[in-house]
Length: 324
Image (cartoon, rainbow, N blue to C red; front, side, top):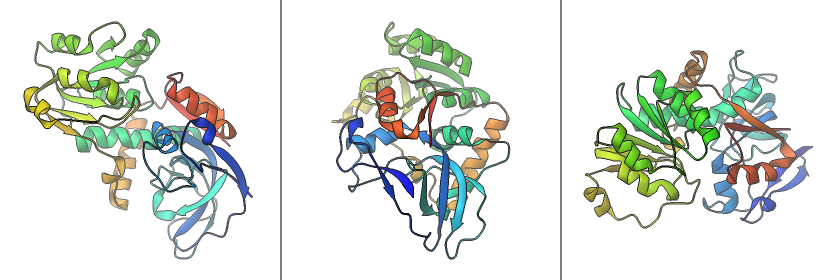
């Protein structure tokens, strides 16, 4: 029997329900994965709330570490007992075990424990594609990172510093400011205390930054516009405060011929080659100490609804891991 989370309607954390089900044998191209640690990510709340539409009923979660229990017909390169991780795009990781495509599973290095993998895979790969394949940040550039102490934010800060960028971090509290400094931010701005865009302009001699990495969305959109240099790039990769809507392209011209992109991870991790290259780079940066997947808190898997409440209330720090 597998215990799995399901949502039959969208809404608040209370719509997360649990059920015990009989899992069939893995089908062609599938493996059965027993989860030992499950990653909580903000995107999980988007599917739960309905911000990102999905066919209902639906599972939740894409990121987990665990062990292969069985393999289906045609699966090569994996065997029962292998330690593996996954970060999607298939959802349903909020489960004690499940069947999923073998193409979405990677072998975990012996140097990476299960909780670290569950805290790192999705967020680490997000940092990798945002910095290296989307924004293509170069050494010497200055980058503004919103939510710089968050699960993805603090990885962005460490990664950027390692490749030689100057990092300005925006955070909400003094406590989170210290976390961003520890991660490596050169300048930290508490947005509840200062005008972030004004301070960014002051730090950059009036020019603004060539790249903004913004996982907050609606609440930081105007700040991002005001802080970006002429012909600069705003990478809007998340909606923690709500989705940006009603964008008038003329605003981009008025602000200095800006570029804006709204990327998603799996347009950059389309095939096995891209997936392998990206995860190899993440584990390389982990081994070098450039990124530290701080696990700020753990919850029992069955308490996923409470974990969602804490995440949306801004009460978490670093990564959150759910333990079956």
